[in-house]
Amino acid sequence: MKQTLIRFSALAIMAASLSACGSKAPKPVSELALADSALQSAETSGAREYAPIELRVAREKKAAADTAMAKKKYERAQRLTEQARADAELARATAEAEKSRLALQEAQDNIKMIRDEATRTSTGAAK
Image 1 (cartoon, helix red, strand yellow):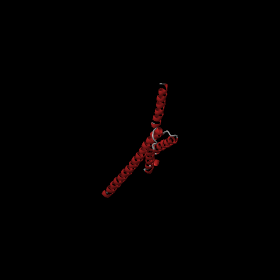
Image 2: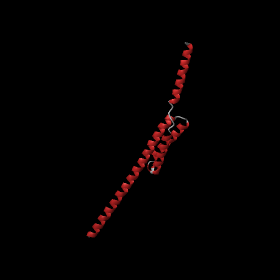
Image 3: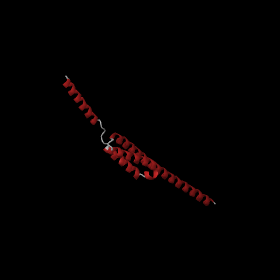
Image 4: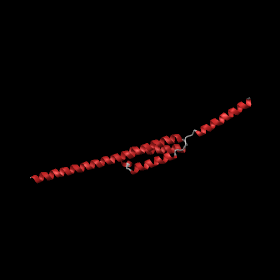
């Protein structure tokens, strides 16, 4: 009876230790690559100039994710990587929106200048 109890206890301990090993989060390798890609996309879209704060936040979170990976804290690394990717996408979208806003403003300024010129020309021709 005592030997059966010892075997059962040993089996339970082995099962518990195996399940603890199996519950470890996997390395977020593909997520890190996606975050790197999102950061690169943000930079090429002009985020350095038009969305520097959002880009800085994304870079900081990516650096924190890299640190977590080095410490083998994969769950934290994955969470930070997802946040870095979202922040990088926000930086890209903000930069693109700002560039579009500036282009619209330039077009409106050009239209106003053409109208003013047309008004001045028509007023001068009427005299």
